[in-house]
Amino acid sequence: MKEDLGSHAYWKATISLLRNILIAWFLVSFGAGILFVDFFNQFHMGGYPLGFWFAHQGAIYFFMIQIFYYAWRMNNLDIKFDVHEE
Image (cartoon, rainbow, N blue to C red; front, side, top):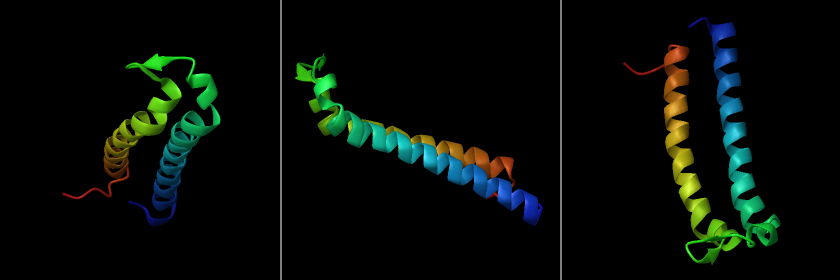
């Protein structure tokens, strides 16, 4: 990997991925569980209001999915920029 251009592009892609994951994290945890809870409570999932479900269960499931997505995307970025482990 060329040190100047390659490392700059790698870190730009990494920071972009982290930014997008943190935005999604905020929208699900704070947005769906607190800010828009009244709107989501109009709908039900498993017998519970959807806002309540997001605040107590959905956010946890979403975070777990994000962990696997992050690991998968970072692995692809490492391979793309040739910084992966052999």
